[in-house]
Image 1: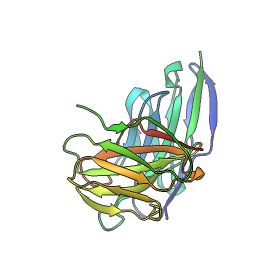
Image 2: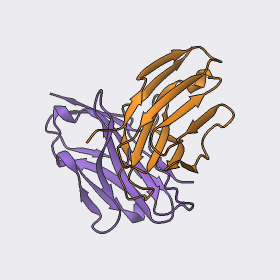
Image 3: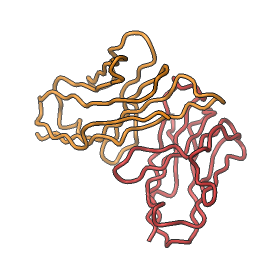
Image 4: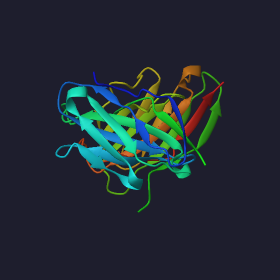
Amino acid sequence: AQSVSQHNHHVILSEAASLELGCNYSYGGTVNLFWYVQYPGQHLQLLLKYFSGDPLVKGIKGFEAEFIKSKFSFNLRKPSVQWSDTAEYFCAVTSAYSGAGSYQLTFGKGTKLSVIP
Amino acid sequence: EAGVAQSPRYKIIEKRQSVAFWCNPISGHATLYWYQQILGQGPKLLIQFQNNGVVDDSQLPKDRFSAERLKGVDSTLKIQPAKLEDSAVYLCASSPTTSGTYEQYFGPGTRLTVT
C-alpha cells in the first residue's frame, strides 16, 4: 500500500524567509503527486500537481515542487514566504493506475506553516 | 461555478447515536469521495463513487458506516452507532472522472464530535 511521509509537523518562519517542506512517498510504480493547502477557515485546495514531464512544477502563489524519482520525494518550496502563506500543507499521492477504476489519493499528515510578520 | 456543498457544518452527538452527513458535488462531476480526517492526520478515503456505483469502499468500516449516491448526484454518509473514535472532520470531494490526473475539489467538511 502506498504511504506518504511529511517530515515537519509545524514550521515557523519569518516573512521573506525561504520555505522547503519535505514529502516522501512509498510506492514503486508510476505516481501522480499533489500538494494541497488549507488556509485557516477554508477548504482544502490544490496548490500544484505532477503527472509527468518536467520534474519541476510550478503552482499558484509562487510555490513550486520538485519530483526526484530516485529519492521518492516531492518537496515543496517557496523562495520568500508571506504572512498570507500561513496554512496547513498536505502532500498526496495516487498511483497512475490502481485497478478497477480507483485512484485512491493517499495524504500525508500535513505540515502546519506559521509565518510571523 | 459553485463548489462542493456539505451539511451540517458541525454536529455533536453521544456515542451509540446515529448521524448522517450530506454532500452535493460540483455540477457534472461524476466521481464523489468521502474522507475522514482525524485531528493531526491527513484525510483518509472512506468511499469513492463513480456516478451512483461504488468504486472503492475498502477502508469504510461497513459494520457502522454506510453511504449512498442514489441518483448519481448528491450523497449521504451515515454512521450508526457512533463511537468516540469517530470524532473527526468528514470531507466530501468531487472530480470530473476517476482519472488520477484530475484534481479533487473539496467541500468545507462536517466536524463531528462524539461524546
